[in-house]
Length: 426
Image (cartoon, rainbow, N blue to C red; front, side, top):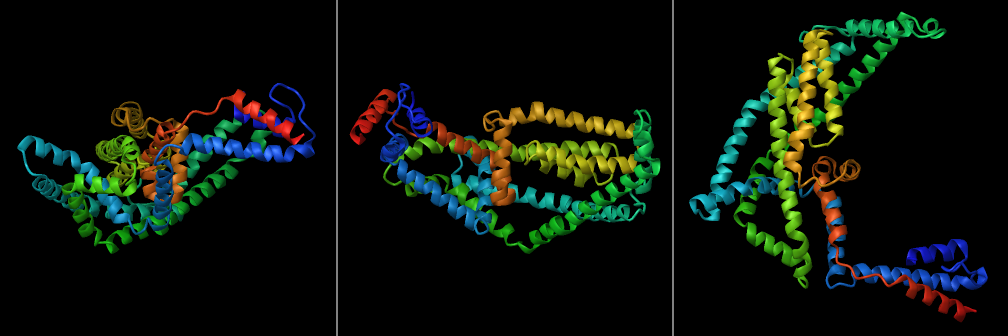
């Protein structure tokens, strides 16, 4: 029997591991306390007896506290670190192919990256702002039972269709259900539901998304600081890594070197794969929406692309505005059916082909662990917590699996110690 089983039987059943009765409960208090201390001592010896494990655990705790309380200060560093992970493969490719120095290769890559980023901002941001404003105005119009100029159906048209569809279903049900609900009641319920949903969406855009867009322009210094940090990280990669690893555990480099290579590869693979994932999904969905002449195609395409940051949940959330806009623009027609079918096919290909291909090594986690990590780290650090939820969960899993430990003492020896302690107490 394991030591945990011994403790359980002693504390809750007042029996020895062999089934015999122990001394009276009043005489066992000191013995039980001693047993709990021995259990904690065995656990500590098993997990923290190896050299450097205590220091490493303290470094992890202190690092978590610093990031939790000062995340708002290290935002530019986090963005620069992500960009450095993304662009490092290009720097290494230039060094191998053209025999360039690392400083020269980093400068070339940064110039190309900044040029592409500025071009994307010039082409994409104005469309996103314009379509976002149009979408917000359409939400306000529909919430007030007015027709939006970009949409075919009005709110009342959709209410009437839903009420008629629901009433046709209820009519086939047994009495007294058909007599309890009239067509007018269903119409009023559909109108109330539509008004509440649209009002909530418009309020969310006004209170959450619009201030975020304004904050982006208030932090224009990020466009200067982040590229500088990224260039320095790319240029001095080896020196920064060596300094980082040396300062974390100066007395035991063997322990940190056991964890760091695997963690670094997983983080690099995840960040590069996630950015590529966002770009592919954004382009494919935007192209599909434009082929159907769907309103707000760029806005919805970018939204679908960003939704992959939150596995499982993001796809459900972004599907609501896509379906909403499609229904109000095309009505319940064959065009709506084909649009939703293409959108569903893209989602299935993303889940079953693209995601496994990009994250076969980085996402070695089950669905429950991924959702739990998103919930926990998203609650702690917001967007960056959601973005890094999977690598952080993988890091914790790696710590648990590869943490150096000693062997547990055998259960018979522990049971023998319990018997001796009982005799001494008696």
